[in-house]
Length: 447
Image (cartoon, rainbow, N blue to C red; front, top):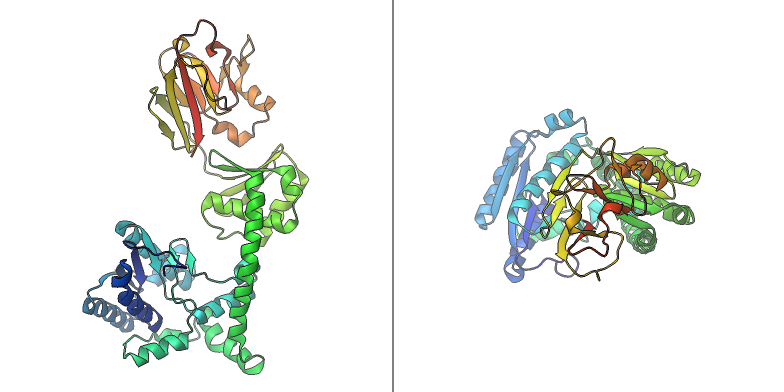
């Protein structure tokens, strides 16, 4: 718990306690270690309401067990069958969504910590086989990990039979879910039918072979992850919530690295790689090879990949609405629509950092209020070094600013005109000259 998971004193652990042998085993382990390690333990139980009296019995058992040991327990009753129908998903997926939604709700209220589940080594073997049957790559062969973001699996290295032996030796009661012994779920059929058949007819240690495959895949996964991350950090920039990747540098990589790079970018945008299929990655790589500016591929969960001149842009397709913020010099503001922070301060010193995301303007040339907004139809400005005006639309085209990025570009104005197209060009009318007495420095920072 300390070495591999990183639990510290004061952390909260929310244990998903079904009442079955695995979760009861983990309950007693966490209960016993709680005083020594100093974490807080709370339990969560979901009654899915599709097993009738058996489900009510499990709920009563869990509540009684927690009360006996003075451990907090929260119970949710939610009909998983109805939820599966409403969401047009399987009963298994519906149950999973309900469980983790409930667990995270509790943890959010409690504070920093983890959700603990009682997946064991036998579950791991079933997971790996299930993924092989569906079709998976090296990452899928890894199976479950001891720690995955806010989810921890402390008994992942313990076999189911050893858990049951421990409970029997210590006379710990638990519930038996009758549906676990029925061929009604895909996972049940693997556990009750396919794995026993393979172990009988082909390899008596088939489950051990699956676990060994998982361990070997993890070693390769870690190596490939580090290699991919190195290339990703070289080629990738995050600009206003979008991922920009150098197109030529990307195409110079091996196909395997390109595939992983795209998955890594998608994960950075939406927080996971769920629903991303092999076909999505294949199509994305093909588009990048063609280098057709303006072409786009729609990816799952409202993500898009677009070619923009010498860049690949991976972004959410959520439309950026018009925004406008007033700026008071000396007070930072955050522009939520594009995840950008704007700092400003007054100075008389002309010796400040010369960076593309920093601008210094003549304070006394400002008319009225300073504002920051995105583009508007008909915008014009006078670029530095020019005497006449230029349409903002033409400026974006000349500078090869990707179309979608044009709506997220911060534009600094006063009550009269545009001062700065950040971070590309400032206006000729606000530059510092020999008559300047006061200077305002503004800096745009990506969140």
